[in-house]
Image (cartoon, rainbow, N blue to C red):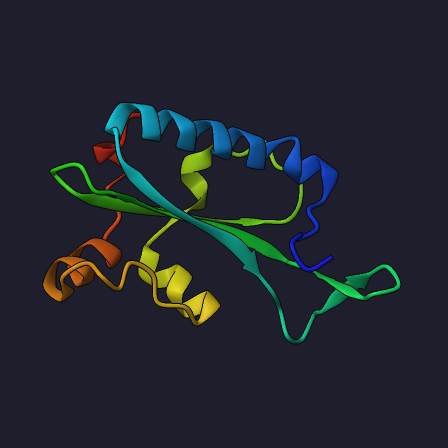
Length: 128
């Protein structure tokens, strides 16, 4: 079970599915995007399932980089639970996701541009 990350059924079939559909729309509209997706595990609230004690993430993220000029980034963090909230309520900066995960995304983007894009939120720049 090394290539899986458990999701609550109401999350996977609901709000996460909506986000994945939106990302496919972004990809079609923008022509070229880079998407990084993963879990956010909690050290203090580790829930495990199964005989192998697979950790169940509290949250999941997607960080999206549109390489088509004008370049832009957007990120989402969602709790691993069902939700009827608007996807815009889950938008955060890529910097926020980096702090939550301890990872450095899009490190090949030139530093000044990376700093600008990763630290800002511009929801209106994306075709919702």
